Image (cartoon, rainbow, N blue to C red; front, side, top):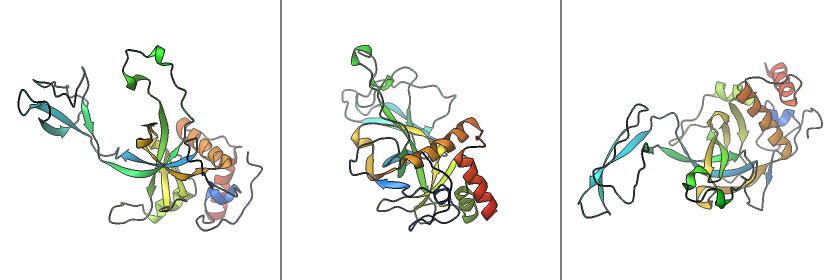
Length: 247
């Protein structure tokens, strides 16, 4: 738990006008040599571009009626009002059940924060005969976006980054990531999403948030989800201090 508010000097990555300095946390990110997923783990995973319209692949049937290894397909926009359409001859590699479609998104590998704990597994006796996707375990993650513009990165305007760093918005959190390719980044709490727990779904980056850092993120997440912030919370005190000192 946080023991109080104090101004402290951080190594390397944390400027004065950020909450990491104001809350007085000596170790915001800490090494995790276990490489086991837990709340606060920093991982890498493919994250879809949720602001881009998704597309769908519609299977138009097999290229040859008696062969399952190739098929004809059409790619088009996926609209909520669109009805799913079954192929004349099903394609074994891409089966669909009633009401299902294949959604296609652009995705990019991004650093992500794990914000859920180890999922509780469901006894397989309770799920026998049901689709695995109905109860398969997942982790909840939140993606980071690099701040600087580049050939493969849109980046953010300096004025916006400054406001995020000073905790103006509940859905954006500024940070500096500690891994080998780490850089100044913004975490999108409003893009919280699940990923599978299979080891192919993610890569652990060898770091995790300290307990006090997780407490800070939890408070900001509560603020985003509820729309309210407890006035006496350490997080709100820090926001007010940032406003008083830096405007």
